[in-house]
Image (cartoon, rainbow, N blue to C red; front, side, top):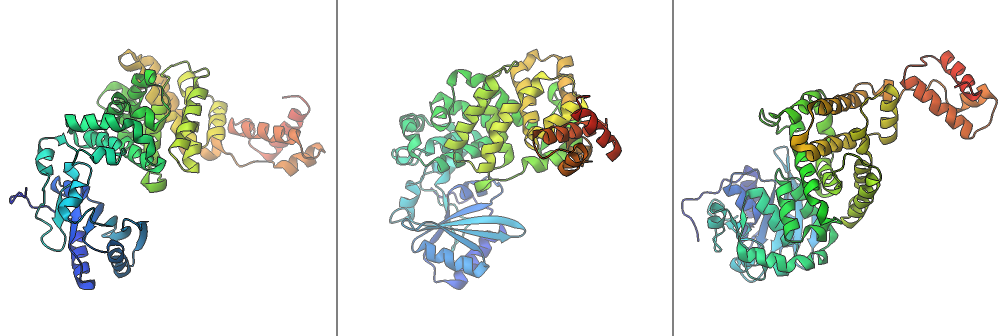
Amino acid sequence: MNDPVIRLPWPAFVYELAELIKSISDAPPLYLVGGAVRDAYLRRAIGDIDVAVDGDAIMLARLVADAWKADIYIMDRERDVARVFVSRDDRAFTIDFAKFRGATLADDLRDRDFTVNAMAADLLGDPGVLIDPLEGLADLRMKILRRCSPRSIANDPLRVLRAVRLSAQFELKIHPLTAKDMRGAVGKLRMSSPERVRDEFFKLLGLEQAARGLRVLAHIGALGQALPLESGELDAALAVVERMRAILTAISSRRTDNTAAAFDLGMLVIQLDRFRPSLQAHLDQVYGNGRSHAQLLMLAALLHQDGARTLQGRDRVSSRRAEAAARSLRLTKDERRKLPAAVANCGVILERINWTALDLHRFWHRLKESGIDAILLGAAIVLGTEGSRLQQAEWLRTVEGTRRLLDAYFNRYDEIVNPEPLLDGRDVQDLLGIGSGPKVGGVLTALREAQATGEIRSIEEAREFALRWAGGGR
């Protein structure tokens, strides 16, 4: 049903695209479809658009890419799908061109996943007019997520994950028949490619209501299909996920005056605020397909399921679980290194109370940038597992330890974390009259740690220290 009152507010680049296509091609009928139409109605920022083409989609994509000197990627030659990467007004957009899924636009929309994603607009006609044969707008207004057809979920089991993500993202109630279909398709979720599962799962992890979505996935049995998890530990894990999201929000540019109104998070925010730009830069690191480091930390919070304050042996269990998850989700080499490092090393944040200069040095020298992840995850575990039982004095000690750690890394790096060596390996060999070997390495380590603690400050002091150390007078 078309709503004559509705006018879809599109960004300028959509109208630029329409004019470009009219000027370069005798184009077939083209329609804006999918989530971009939904987001236009909701007046959300639009970064990616889908264009359904009643004709040769790849050829049209090539013409657009050539005209705008943009990159193009052929996503599915058999199904006639291509993606164009465009920059306009200092923003990056992707435009997916795909041939109709059927003979008509109505067939195309009926073959999509959910009615809220099955609305369209005529790109070359009046893009402001909504085309809505499946009444997706009514569902959107009533906050209902409904599949487009009885075969929508079965045709693509990945839509189980997408349904949960959309439900959490837009606060939609999943229609009972859609929920039934989702439960029936859970067992086939692993038939989807790991890359598609990964991308949809990370979109969920990027939401403010990620824990809610993860809880729904667990309830219908889908979470264990996507990740190597033990359901008995889920409540503790989701509490940590919620607190991790709160910490990440407090660090981010989305923080408001109410973000850290409570004592526990408020005290952490006060101490972290001086490091906020550096933490934001760390969390904004991007991996394949736009996955952020913040999303990786949300995954770490989920995988570190033990919830115990005493972590003897459990850090190794969580680390192995993280390694298995990283493999199953086809994460990049960098992600596969950082994810287990975070869950394997957050325990020291929970167990150590006093941080000496030597402790600080050894922590950062061993973990390097991954130490930031261990710190944030450790704080989330404390807040998530203690909850209302959190002791003020104990939490203040944890916060102070966090401050000291981050201060050493961000403000005193050359002094505590990685001081410039006063002697190198050749100097030590010449001084002691020995060849290369473990003893040289031991002396260099001892020198580095002595520099970090301020015990030695000059080359002469370093030479004297090396002679004492090598002679057993440590």
